[in-house]
Length: 207
Image 1 (cartoon, rainbow, N blue to C red):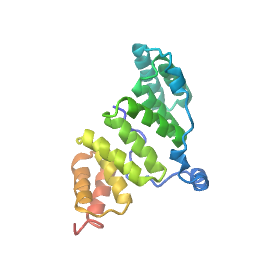
Image 2 (cartoon, one colour):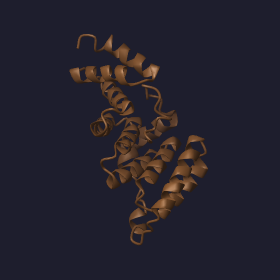
Image 3 (cartoon, rainbow, N blue to C red):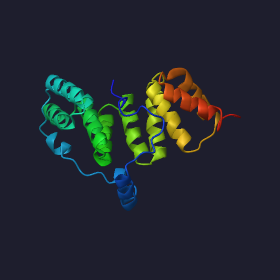
């Protein structure tokens, strides 16, 4: 399962790079909204459908990505998409590579492309939510995290991400209290449990 477990280990995500903040300030919300056009529609006019090759190349790309070799991972996933333009996992992997590189335009584009292919796959919604959250678009992030939770309510990554995004909006409701309780109960990561308990003993103490 690919749900950004490797880059999503802490409950605080306010550490966007200074240069990105400056650029975001100059470009407004265009970091997500003004995505560059891609050529996938043109390519899909005469598509290949070698799904077996695409799956193998995407698995290779995932291994390279876990090793931190973004260049070779990108080359492998590009070949996977050439093999099968509609291989959603490859678009998801490419989105993760762009996310690692700080290219939030194209990361969002790839996750949205994967969602168009498989709208009921929760990981893609979760990953798009992470992009929106990094870009400071918390309502959009919450919407995507909620979709992921609705599709797979027993995934602690999705539940914790939704809780964090809601808390970042200063929401103090019975629903956020319930989410924090779920984080304490479900999430095996100690830092997340400690964070959720701290919220329950402070901002949500009387809820």
